[in-house]
Every structure is written in C-alpha cells, then in structure tokens.
Image (cartoon, rainbow, N blue to C red; front, side):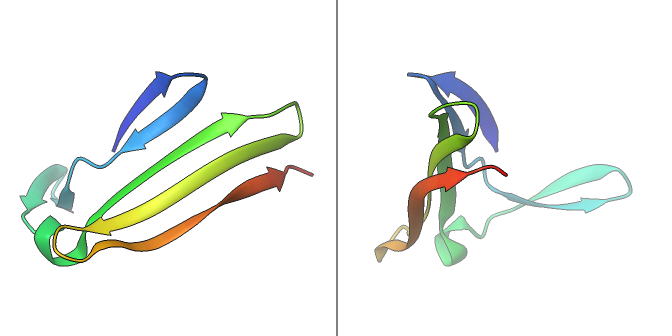
Length: 73
C-alpha cells in the first residue's frame, strides 16, 4: 500500500501483492486474479470517522465494497 494525505483524507492505494521470505518482499503478479484493494479514511471529529474500502477486479469491476461512518469508543 501507498499511504497519502489528500483532500483531508488518508488514501490507501494498492501497490500489488508480495510474499515475504527471509526479510525480502517477492512480488506476486496476481492482481489480475484477486483484484486490487483501495481505501480511504477521513476524520469527522474527535470520535467519528468516515471510510470506504473496495476491491476492484480488472475484468468484473467492483466486486466488494464497504463504507460508512464509524464511532470510536
């Protein structure tokens, strides 16, 4: 994942899948199979945040999504 600050939100951008072995990351070219995961979060106030997370497949489009406003307690 790449983490960015953009328009008052933390953006999590998919960079691909990898396998970690002996302290090294080995890229796995399987995004075409599983899809890419992306998300963002935005603080609403001290105790609430809004977020969205999606998995998008290159052939079938958006295959999973959840989003909403959440309370931190």
